[in-house]
Image (tube, rainbow, N blue to C red; front, side, top):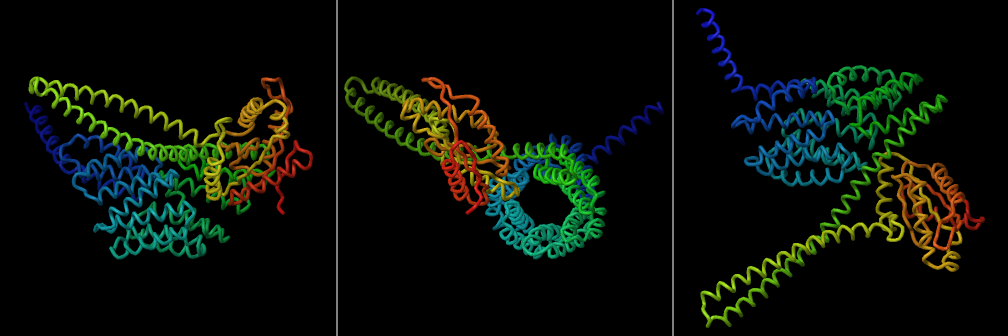
Length: 594
């Protein structure tokens, strides 16, 4: 009996404790997670992953649960887990939207924009941030206003517009200082420092980083302080102050290793590798570069490209040709993956925009046509009713209603079928508008649009960009002797040869007639020449199979390096190609200036 009484008492105590925990656990978890996030984001994320599922089914937990989801989304973003972060923010928006008003909607747009920016989709990010700015600009939440301005500054900085970024950072800093938001002030000082190192000097950036450290230390922001020390290390390295730089990096590295913040740690390991290389320690530098790649693990593609470039150059400087070649291959593969993704995103955006514009116009026409048909049907029904009124109003009214219903149903079916046909036609039109109808290659307009995108990307990534102008030799004689049908067969097969000889990421376009223009990302003129030689070897080995028999043809090529102006590069390559024609055809000339 005593044993049973003890069990009953213990059970009662357990239930009482569980009830108390349930009443306060969300707030307690939130406080604990926030405190952990400042020094160990990985542990805070683990805590939230354990806690959130238990709260999602609780009645009345919406506002508190939203705060947990918001914090977890921020931690997931820092860990590079963008899809999970997006899901948490969308759920957060659903929970706060009934009572949150415009500022709540603005905050959701702001966080979604940060996810787009960190994945390199800067256009989408800017659009979301500007929408957020409009929603929060009239509100009283100074912290949110400053964060939105800060996000605009970060995105412009990524896009290479440091002057514009500085303006937004300065506005955000003023808002945060006036509101006494010291934690945010520290973050803004760090972001402003990043653009000042570019616009003014490393010393100007270091001064702001140190001020940010002073404020952050007062609030116990351990991982943030470590990040600032890593950034100072990078600037001191640029100034050649190696001993001082190493001291800052050594202070930052163990803290960031403990936090599990992938992007920051991968970047700092790259800087430590640079420091070792500057000290003449290539083996140690390569070790840190490899650690940086392993840490990034596909979550920080821009860091991976920079690290691979440094590793390849270091291998080459040490005379390690095989590792250098392998690293260059990894670099080209990584850039190709990024190019394909960027190009797919760009094409998807252009196609969607075009489809929406045409579809809106067509749908409006269909709507007006439907109204006209409805009017005609109404008029027809009125005439029928007037004609048949003498035969019995009740019966004929029912008959008229039935006929109107039947005609309307048929009209709706025809309109629905017409909408489907229009959608299919719009898809075909969008594709035809960007491709040459004979060869399937890009047309002139599409190459110009996408070529400028490649120039912008090459500037941002500091990567080379080559351009080729190519023309089939004596093609007019083929048309004159055998007709345009055979000429078209040759052009179609030539397009296939170009696809075989060049990469998926290269832009291949029929420029006009028998002339082609090619843009080669991440390639220097000498690499373009290598690709052309593969094409020339194929042309020499395999004649074109046409309806009148095999025809052997050659091409003349001009090569230029794109240095910021697409039209200029095309003109240079074109002149080089005509020089190849003048020198006897079937050859390559690289533009050498003049």
